[in-house]
Length: 306
Image 1 (cartoon, rainbow, N blue to C red):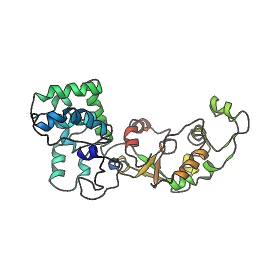
Image 2 (cartoon, rainbow, N blue to C red):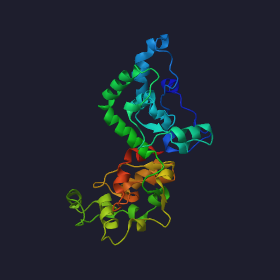
Image 3 (cartoon, rainbow, N blue to C red):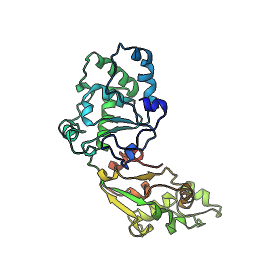
Image 4 (spheres, rainbow, N blue to C red):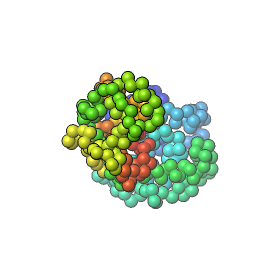
């Protein structure tokens, strides 16, 4: 909390392992707050700084680190979690060998075993009502908050859909996507794009709608794999994906072409080796497509670059 208030960046080493870790979950400029050791409520500090500590401090935190899933059995960590913009819950896989790992394995909760705020323990039982009111003010209801916690546990678990990353150099040097030419109206295009191209003097490569029509549809002559050089994609489990160093991108599907997008990315001098872009990396016809889409907050939140 003090570091966030002073604007002091946190150590680059993982607080769990004592060594630097290249993970999307720890990339924010400030590590969030967490009151695991609170002073007595009648102390002068709390009296003088109550509003700041409990209202303003959470607004400064770009992340909130909860010390293991076992902490979700207690009311105060849940209260802290309720404030977080980008919460991080450490799973057993994040802990080094030792007593802490054993503790998390024996006491950690999962999406299925999380008992919700109603089952949370609190040293001072009278605090429960106040914590509950705060959670209701922030999230609307305890039930909504509990659903969010279960989603977060699901996103940060080791199980999940198969994922795919694209090598940045393969994207930036893709001849099909970078070749600029006079664009022609195609029956596959949306009406918006057709109207834009009707003048016949628009230059570009392919829009994302064209990529979808030409490389993903079942009757397409080529698959998306043929767009890029061999070895451009890396397939990995959800567990490995959430530990990977990658960038994400927000872009238009209809009114901008990939030659335009790539020209901007080349100027950006991206510092990561991989990128996750849904039109290329999300199987548009995959049976688990929605499983990936539902994890969008985790995918974008875990990226090293945006």
